Image (cartoon, rainbow, N blue to C red; front, side):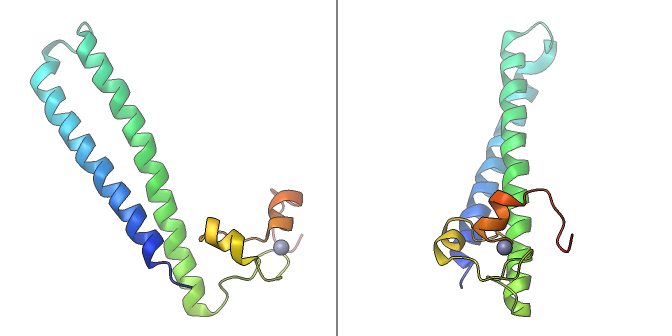
Length: 115
Ligand SMILES: [Zn+2]
């Protein structure tokens, strides 16, 4: 299993979102002399919040991929963390950082391993 392509994609997304946030901050610095009463300033604030939410999500994905890389190194990647069964290749393809098989993900959601 090679996570490289997934990591590259998430990294590119994070880079792009950071660039957009920086550009937005620059724009805001130029226009926000009266943030609360300037409709432009409010629009920028909303866009910024959306970008920050997307960035947080992408960073979470990135952290999950790092953990997946650790499991590959440890030889436990591809085994369900709950039941220990192999995770289906199609599922890993779609969700490379997943830790559980489809059965555990759908029927035992929220339960801790070993309970
Ligand atoms: Zn399972």
